[in-house]
Image 1: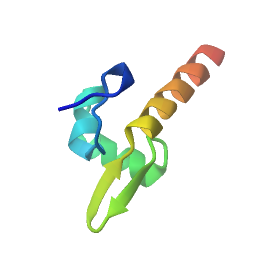
Image 2: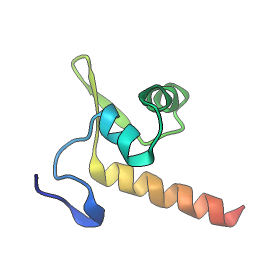
Image 3: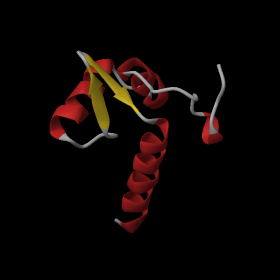
Length: 69
């Protein structure tokens, strides 16, 4: 599998991928999506996918918010 910068795969990520990345249960990823607090995702039919670039931007934003607090 090809990877982008920062070790993210060169494909859209699944909720399982996000859960594995952040070492949280898959249910937490779905909760983040419902509350709109996690990385932005989008639907492809019944499936949720995440753009690796958007996930990286979300991580950067969370890091900035954490250091500002």
